[in-house]
Length: 146
Image 1 (spheres, rainbow, N blue to C red):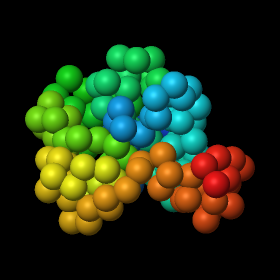
Image 2 (cartoon, one colour):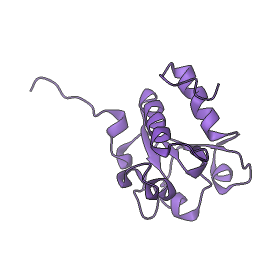
Image 3 (tube, rainbow, N blue to C red):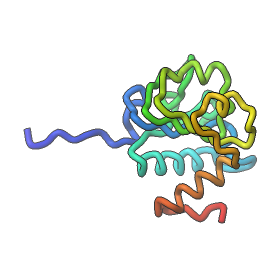
């Protein structure tokens, strides 16, 4: 054996991921390319040593593969950090969250169930926060919404 390599964070199975950045419908602006948004989210997740996940709305729209779906009809996750972009927190999705150590919600609705569940609720536009993270991490495309 020459070396044992850890898997790429972006392709790690969600059930094994220590950090997950997940997208809901609120992460994709009206008329935007949902697959492009998920690619951006995946790049940010990888830069942070994490994996990208999604809600059923996102996978049903074809913006992410079904193996990225978190929830009762997807995978159950137990990450150290769960960052929810534009996820309202429907019971079917929250049912897939085991016991994450820290939850951060980015949503324009301060009263949504995901924000109530979160350790930190950021009341802001999810696509704008994603663009800011891209910018601060020095990723290509980090100036989308500037």
